[in-house]
Image (cartoon, rainbow, N blue to C red; front, top):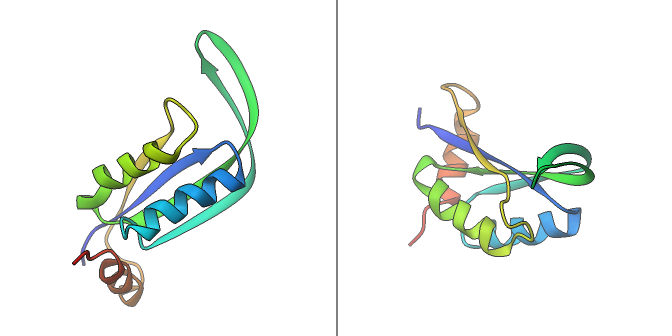
Length: 108
């Protein structure tokens, strides 16, 4: 079975997450995006502990598209250092779904 990658991202809002998803999926750098609203984040930024509401964005893609998808996220994102973390998916899963994902991220 071919490997797939989930790109875990955070965004300042659901609206921003949707804009990022539209850019990345629209370019076929990911086959699908999931947006989860209402995440509460605590993090260090420039020496200060910050707290805020964010949205989680999960992009489903192929390993060879991670770099281009990351660049596309960064081009749209409002953060100067956005979270974009590739999570490799092990073997197994729904073979039909994986075939669909691979087909939808094949660029002509």
